[in-house]
Length: 416
Image (tube, rainbow, N blue to C red; front, top):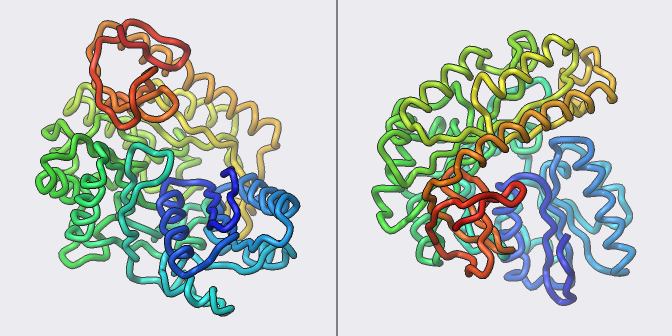
């Protein structure tokens, strides 16, 4: 959590990178409307734990700063509006539909509470490009919302339908980020590979990636955030093969490696699809590294089904894992399915994390002797093109350096 400074607007961001981008936009909009001595909590609803942490943080700040104005926004404020609105510490709820709009914060400064139905949102609100304090890489929000209804996921209720910013807007925002000194831009959204589906002529993500790289030859790196393998378009495949500045790291929303569980999740891919996608991309881009989101202990998951997900780490050649024990969310079909016990969910999540650690160990060991380019970040660490962490002691944040990997210190590579 941030260190709070009176007479300022502080934003505490939970969850995804999209929230991070929107948090900075909210802070600027609130200060521009004259707000001060305010804390805005930009919440996440992915798990029950993320909601609990937000409520706990709100109470803690209220105790530490009696009288401070506390506003709550984000997905949990949408999906569990009453729980947050009923908290005596909370001054107002700011909906996701217009939380980055300056007019919203001007209305709040006059004591009004604008109401907008996120389910009715049809147009993406571009978030003005800006530096985010503490971050070297820039995050460009190109898409919001989701039209799919995975049975475990509550996010469509918090984000509304899928909507995209036009390519020309994305290019203008990216140009501004480059002018601000960023060497790497990360494209982010709720369902990134659905970008363009609501725009004229239905352009695809591959088109946008190539258009950005063509329009911004001075941009050193373009990176994609989480995407859906079944929605990856052919032009994106070509871009991965041909565009050196498109980083060789894809984080995949896989969730499970068992076909029956994937069906019960209402995912649109099968186990074979994930494996074939990884093999094809690796053939096109031999230096590619894959990360993945995986859920442990989804309702009805048997030991054999869990083993199929565990084997997916090897079968797809995954390296960077985000593992989540299944968290029941009200309003979702999965919450009404036969549940796996919490202890078993935890055990299966632990097994997946250990498999991920072994895979990352092998990957990092294989880098020794290779020459890598690194973007230094804060805290003496940077990222190689494949997202491997690299120790960068004494290197200024934002600097690009290159060197031969001499070894590793824990989970960080060390240059010679």
